[in-house]
Image (cartoon, rainbow, N blue to C red; front, side, top):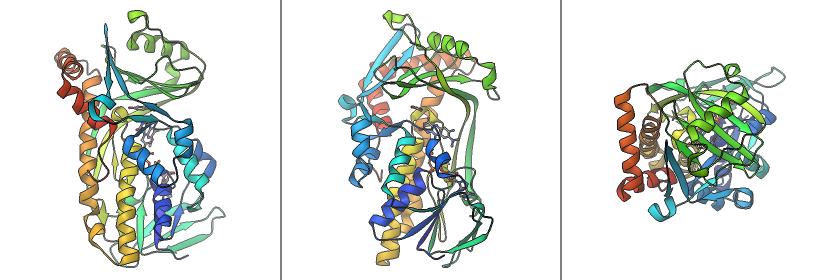
Length: 385
Ligand code: RFL
Ligand code: PHB
């Protein structure tokens, strides 16, 4: 096979990149290890920044998002005895949208703009330092295949081969806690997300729709979900989220999914080597506390698609040359914000830390400057920041 851009990975980064390239008149082929059904049913992120919503809308992917997504003005910050609303629209002029990554993925598949080869094996990248890179893999029948391309886009997440195919440096931070996440068939007990500090550990009340709630508890690394029967999860969520505080109630319901997510940050730099460009989780991972993972993937491929259209259609290499630096500015900003939210809200077991966290929470919720900083970072910076 021969194409202009060989894209590895059909997650949101890979599929959106293919969609944006097609709009710019550049052809691409995507290869993906999993089946379409598996990719479409993965439960992941739930929040879109306003710049992500604007981008998706401007490229014809906003119809269902606007009909079925839910616009939120802000979030609640909670700790024992206190709950404060931060209104991002008042503070920073921007809102966020609750619209699951699963839905973004379905919209991308429905758009039908990406040509995807699913269920491939043994993906390998070759000659990325030359003008003639190529990708080899086996198809679902086990036959060897090869794609020759002008450029390879590594959109294969943190476990894919792309990030190891280039000599680059990885900055990494592993956090000493994980999240136990549940999906439940119950109406959310809140109109907007609640981020809660508690001496037992962090808790988050999020949602997917008016009938589906998504909730998380901070748990130690290595936690087995089997040690958390549903009753125990709901009891702990009620305690940490402030059930009974000022008459607020958490309504439990049937749990349809339960899993443990370890938390880490890494940044792979540079995000380009020769004709290989990294985007999304292949280049960086953030802990989910700032809701940035999916939004960063969208911001990366927005920049990358512009750079590749300029390079491959117009023969202009400048944007491709600055892609890594341009993308990394936002990546480090979001890495810092995600680290800051994480360390402000998660229990470390140290009383000195706990007092610093409470002091920071009081400042963020009582000072307009503090609240605006959080709002600006959470609701999103302009593409190209
Ligand atoms: P993805 O979505 O991981 O997609 C990468 C795709 O590459 C495929 N792949 C390969 N394809 C071909 N050959 C290979 N050798 C391959 N190896 C891998 C994979 O099957 C996959 O389809 O990365 P992308 O597109 O960069 O998108 C990034 C987002 O998915 C990610 O940032 C967020 O989902 C992160 N994240 C969360 N972010 C949040 O903001 N809030 C969350 O609640 C949240 N939950 C999560 C998450 C990430 C998770 N992962 C990666 C383990 C929950 C989980 C479980
Ligand atoms: C989610 O809904 O899955 C979610 C929302 C906000 C976060 C993390 C996860 O910060």
